[in-house]
Length: 65
Image (cartoon, rainbow, N blue to C red; front, side, top):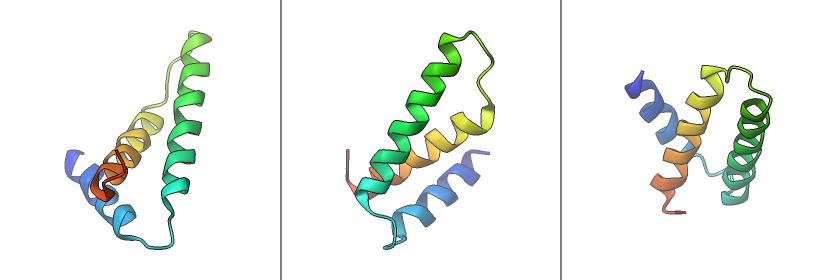
């Protein structure tokens, strides 16, 4: 699974059609949704956590952090 995250992050980071703002906005939306779900004491879908890791790595590979 770790390789899948790294591969997806690399593809996203190398995609010139995705702007830095797109990464930032997507990560912000994911964080807000995860916070909302956690506040309601509901289980957080693993797929959301996976996508958050992918977006964070992609931003890092672009040097945005």
